[in-house]
Structures are given as structure tokens and as C-alpha cells.
Amino acid sequence: MNVRFTFLQRFTLLTLIVSIAAAFTMALGIEGAHRSALEADIELAAVGRVDAELTKPLDELAAAGRMTPELTRRFARADDDARFNEYVTALRVYRPSGTALYPAGAPNAAEHVHRALNSDAFVRVASGDTITAFSPIFASGEQVYVVAVDFSTGQLGAGFERERQTVFTIVLGVVAVIFCSLVALAAGASRELERRRRESQSTFVATMRLMAETVDLRDPYTAGHSARVAVYSRQIATAMKLSAADIDLVENGALLHDIGKIAIPDNVLFKPASLDANERKIIGTHPVVGAKLLANVPSMGEIVPCIMHHHERIDGRGYPDGLSGDAIPLGARIIAVADTFDAMTTDRPYRRGLDLDRATAELQRVAGTQLDAGVVATFLELIARGEVQILVAPAEDHAEPVFGRKAVVEMVS
Image 1 (tube, rainbow, N blue to C red):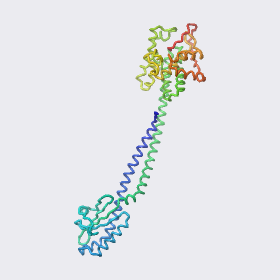
Image 2 (cartoon, rainbow, N blue to C red):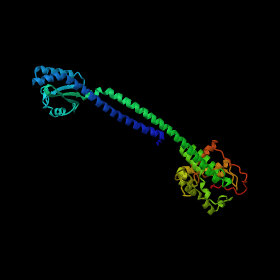
Image 3 (tube, helix red, strand yellow):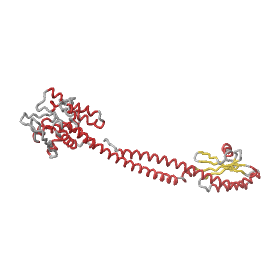
Image 4 (tube, rainbow, N blue to C red):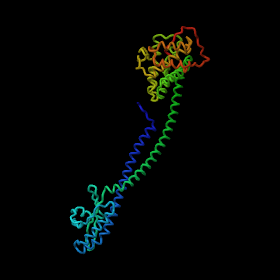
């Protein structure tokens, strides 16, 4: 199924996709920055508290020069106290060389200790699911030690879950407001574009009607012919359930199907009798002339096939290209039925127009050879239901028809 989206639908879908992507990108960025800041605050607070608790024991260690059982117990109490922080998992104390003072047997950390001693603040080291903050502490006697505090990244992440949800909720809310505003603006722009499109279409149709009337007015006996063919063609296209755009295309093509007749000499166009072979050849050029006239007009490009081929025949004996069957554009096949019907039911200088019964009989006779049988069937069904009536040509004071000549039904109008 061919699904066609309007400008507003395409814009809304694209904006929604971009907005969702932007929301998640923004939320992740904000959440990442927020998490980093909170982690730094948590680590700084924990390290500061440990430093405060260990300052006095380290001063005593610096004065004694060695670990004592009492200092070990005080370090253990500081360790236990540090673990009351839900994120802290371990505490260690190092000499400047990187060897451990507490707990005994802790792994050497010379590299990280040296980095901490050379930094202005604590140094963060990530390893697996643990982040370790190395912080220098200056004791009495200009002695320096390094405290290492381990934090669990899993516990940090769990603690940030609520903040993460809050950040995503706020960001999505802001993006939703922006999205709705953009869609509202697009809707307004779409309505304005549609209004201008309708104005343009109205001007376009009015221009085509004027062009059609200009052609028809060359011959008082065919005045209004193009407008009537357009009415019949629209009725047929609608009954065949064509799309709204295709119905308009067929109607517009019908309005201008005879535009090429402006190039036909008067003595041929107005001849009140049957045309000879040369004259038929001349008048047979009007579809090609009309197509060439409109081919370079972008807004009329789609109706050119209707104009070019409305005199083709289903059996391939038409003109200008001898197309047959479905090779003839559907719009041209519809216009051919409407054109033939109006030609038969309109008074001409050499005969009166046929009544509805005789016209329908003639359509049935040529269905499948000259005209598309399916299109004819649709048109006859409309006539049978009373939805189509013969449209009467306007009376002209200066055009007095002369009847009584041989009643020849001219299929070329």
C-alpha cells in the first residue's frame, strides 16, 4: 500500500525522532556531569572526614616513629567509622614510599601514592567496580602520609538512580514542550501553505478555464465544449474512484484538451461539412500542438499526456501515436469518452445533436474499438442512474445553425 504523508506529518515524525534522540543525549550528558559532580562531593566529604579522624593518630605516629597496638586500634576505629558511609568499602594508610602502614600486609601502591603527594588534591584511581581516592595528610614534624579510601561504583550507581530518573524526567519534559511548540508552529505554517496552495490552484484553474474559453470562442458552434467535457470527465473519474489529485488532473486535462486548435486554420476548423484526408491530417495535429504548448509549463506537465493522447483509439487506429489499450493514459481514455459524448449531443451547423438514447447507443457501439469499454460502462451507469444529463450549449445571437445536411457524427471535435 502506497502511504503518502503530508508535510505536517513528515515534519512531526522527523521532529519527534530528533527530539527523542536529543532528549536522551542531553539527559545522558546532564546525568553524567551530575554524577561526576556528586561522586566528587561524596569522595571529598568521605576523605575529609577520614583525614580529620586520622590527623591526631598520624601526629602521634610521626612523633613515635613506629606503629603501636594503640595506634593500630585507633586506625581500625577510623576504618570502621569510615565504613558507616554507604559508599566506602575500605581504608588504607601508606608511608611516602608506598608501603602500607595500615592494614598490615596491604598491597604496595607506590605509583598512586607518589601521584597523590605531587597533586594539590586527592587522586582518583578506578579499578573494576572500585574507585580509590588517594589523599596526602601532613602530620607534625613535616611528616606526610597518604590515606587511600575505596568506594564501590555499584553503590554509587544505586544511590544515583533517583537523581537519574529526576534528570530524565525534567529533560524529557523540557523537550516535550519544545516539540509541541515546534509542531504548533509547523501546523500554522502548514495551514498557511495550504491556503496559498488553494489560492494558487484556484488561479491555475481560472487560467485554464480562460484558455479553454479562448479556444472555444473561435467557433460559436463549439462554445463551452471544453467546459462540458471537463464536467463529464470529472464525473467519470470520480465514479472510477480515482484519487482527488488524479480527478483534478483529468478535469484540468479536459479543460485544455483542444488547446492545440488555436493553430488550426479557420477554413479547416470551421468547415461545415466532412473533412477531406488532407484536412483531417491538419486537424489531427492539434493534440501534438497542444502538448508542445504546455510541455514547458511545470504546473501543467502532468496533464500533457491527457492532451497528447485523447484521440488515440483502443484498437490502435487513433492518433497521433497509434497507441492501443492500456498503453493510452487513463486520463486520455476518460477524456475521449467525454469528448465524444459532447460532440454527439451538441448541435453543429450540419446536424442537430443526438438525444440521450441515441448517444448512449452510439457509445455502446464504439466501446472496445474506439473507446475504452470500462470507461464507457462507467459513464453509461452514471447516465442510467440519472447522474449525467446532456449539458446544453449557450445560445449565441449571431450563430444561427443550419440543419438539414447529412447527419454525420464527427468523432473529431
